[in-house]
Image (cartoon, rainbow, N blue to C red):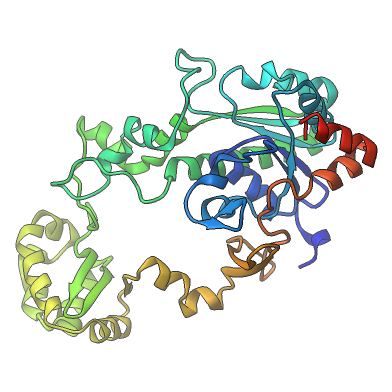
Length: 400
C-alpha cells in the first residue's frame, strides 16, 4: 500500500504532546497516513526516551511503542524563538495535539485561540488529567492515579487481592484512542463545513468509560460487583484453567457447549445431566459446587489433548502464552504484526505494526520511531523555508 492510498494522506499533524495518551493519538493518525511532526525538547526529548529498556542513545522500547510514523523536531518551547517556530508550524498543520498542564499552552502562545488565529480551521486536541473547566483542572493526570480514582483497580484481580492496576497504562491508551476518534470526526466535519474544532479530552472521563458494563452493574447493585479474577462473573465455565502441563483458556458460552464439554472433553456426562448445572444461570449460581469438579478433571489431562478435544467439539479455547512467546509466535508472524526497522545506531529495531487492515492490506510502518531531532532541519526547511544560516543561528541560541 503506497502513501497516496492511505486515508489521511495530505493531513499534517503537529504533536506537541508527551508520554503516552497524546503520542498514541498522534501515532494512530500517522498510521492512517497523516504526516506527524513530533515536537520535543532539544536535549531530553520526550520523557519516555528515558523510560525502560534503551534502544541506542535516544530511544527506549517505551518510546518506540508509541511513536512510529512520526518525524522528530526539537524546539525549546521555553524560548521565544522556539514558541515562534512552533506557532509557525501549527499554521501549516491541520491538527494540533497538546497535553500541557492547564494554561501551559496559552503561556507559550500555543493555546487554541492563539493557534486558531493563524489557522482558523485547525482541529485542536487538548488532553488533560481532569476536566479543564472544573476545580481539578490544574491537577496533573497520571494513568495510575486515574485507574485508582475511576474504580478500575477495584474491578481488577482476584477477590482476595488488594486493588490491582492493569498490566499496561490502559487509561492512557484508551484516552489516546478516544482522542484519535474525535480528531477523525472533526476532520470529517471540516470537509463539510470548513470549520475546525477544539476537542477536550480528560483521562478521568475516559477512565470512567473503561469501566463499561462493570460500572453500570455497580450502580445497579449500589456497591462494587464481586471480583472473579480470570473467571467470568456471569458465565461458567469461562476463564483460565490449569491442565496437567500448563494453563489454557476455556470459554463455554452456551448450554450445548457445556454439554459437549462435559461429555467429549472432560468425560463427565454426569455434570451435564445434573439439574443444578443445566443452564448458565444455574451454573453461575452453583459455581462453588461445579468448578472444583471441572478443575479436577482438567488437571489430570494434558493441555494439548484438551485443546484438541475442545476444538473438535466447537468450544472456543486457547493457550495462555508468555508475552515474549506471543510476540514471537507463528500467529504474530503470519499476521505481519511485528516488523524490523532500520536503526542508525543498533542496526535494526523491532516495531509493532498498526493493527488496521484496509482492502486486505495491513497499514505500513512508513517511518520507524525517530531518533531525537532527526527531522528538525528538513521540516523547518521544507515547511518554514529556513536556510542553513538561520538554522545554525537557532541552534546556537538553543531554540532548536
